[in-house]
Every structure is written in structure tokens, then in C-alpha cells.
Length: 348
Ligand SMILES: [Zn+2]
Ligand SMILES: [Zn+2]
Image (cartoon, rainbow, N blue to C red; front, top):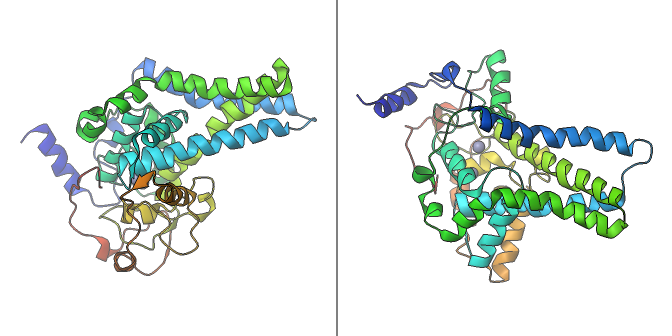
């Protein structure tokens, strides 16, 4: 039996509650990756401390907050509509200029280059909450300690692990797309631009270097930190707490978590998403706020998006089961336990 056959065998043995085989054997990444990741993750938080120190007693300038909100929306929608719904799941087709614009906006969110992001996320769908998932909160089992450790791993810890996801296997379509490889190569420059823009805007608006610095802190670093933690909360919290109204694949415990709906632009309707991954709308039920889907609808009306996969009402009803609030340790319902299968990762 080859190593990959053994790995598949171990995945099929997974019972849904034990730690993943080899969970403890995980090697940390090389020092260069650890240092870079630490800088990307820790610096925005240091900035928050500095900003609070500087702004203490005098409040925050409205300019800084408006710039922060504007850049949060642009980069956040770049991740949710561009990286996620368009490029990972092909839930619609975008005009080439829109596709590149969304990929550029998402790259400015400091979440890795577009090709790696897509590859990791497709792998997450192919192995959701079972061995092979790059960021499952169930990695260390469903006991209390294991669950807490798993949440930390799913939120942030996985970024520091040496667990590469081969883009050639999970994102060959993007590797073959010259526009996307160019955007991926420009990732460091786009990160720099993401911080330089608020600095220059703050400087220009206030006419002082100090105004540029506070805009850099709030609309640059702190805005980056907030978007990162909201995105990572979808990986961690939205697989543990919330409701599971729709059937998903075996072991897949994605949940709907309404408090994060607005900040995540609709991505926290994660149970709906895992149930119908290639659907352009994640909030499948009436009243579920999904700004990303709203904007895709606008793109469609403007003729910029086509072939949009909107929810099929009948199909959605067939995937529904009784609404329940789930605890951290609840197993997937027995009738959801179908035989595991590897779907096409692009449509997974
Ligand atoms: Zn997920
Ligand atoms: Zn997805």
C-alpha cells in the first residue's frame, strides 16, 4: 500500500470524534514562514495598542474611521465575492476586468496570494472536518480540551504549521490563468499598497503627517486585523457553534452563525454554504443578510456577471432538516452520514 493509499485509508477510518490520526505529529513550519506569518498576524494587533495609546482621551478621527470602513468593504468583498464565491467555487462568471479587480481587492486583505488561498479553501471543502482538512476545529477530538485546542488551530494555529497545499492539485485552473498568476505574484506589492493607500489618503485629507500616521493605523493595520479575524472566525466558530438547518457531507459540521453575517458579508451562513458550495448566495433562508450575494445580483443586472448559480428553491428544501442548535460536541445527524466521497474540488 502506498503512503497516499494509507492516508486515504486513515481518513476513511475517522469516526467523527477522535483526534485526527497524526494530529500530534504536526511539524511547525520553517523559521521564514513562521516569522512572516507572525509579522502579518501580530503587527496589526500591535497597531491596535499604539492607536489606542495615541487616541486615548481625544477619540478617533472620523476620517480614519470612514477610510477604515471603505477599505474594509472593498478588501472584504474582494475575499468573499472574488477569492471565495467566484474563484474557489465558480458560482458565477465575471467579465475578465471584474475578475482581476476582485482578485486584486482580495489580495489587499493580507490573507495570502489568491492561488494559495483558493487551493487551501478547496482542500477544506474536499476534507471538511476530517483528516486532510487544513483547518478543522475537530483536529484534536471533541473532548473539551481538544475542542478548545482545535478552535485555536482552526482560527490561527494552522497558519504556522508545515502543511502545504499543492496548488497544482487544487487550483490548476488558476495556475493556467496568466491574469491570476500575475495577481498572485503581485501579492507583496498589493499588501504594501493596502497600507500605503490609507496613509497617503490621511496625509492628503488632513494635510499633516500625523493624520497620515493615524489613518495608516486605523484604516491600514487595524482594518486588516479585523478582516483577518472575521475570516478566520468563519473557519473556527462557524464549524462549532450555531445552527445546522441543512444537510452537509459526512463529518462536515459547518454552522450558520448570524452575529457574524454583516461583518463577514454573508459568509457566516456557513452551513448553507457547505450544503450548496457552488451557490452564489450563502444565506439560503429568507431574511439571512448576505451582502456579497446582493452585490453579485447587482453585477448580474449590470451585465458584468453571468451564469450566476442562484439557490434552487426545491433543491434547498430537499437539503433541509429540522433546525437545531448544536453544541460543540454534537455529532452530525445519523441520516447525514452518507459515504464520504471526493467531489470535484472546484464544485466541492
Ligand atoms: Zn468551512
Ligand atoms: Zn467555500
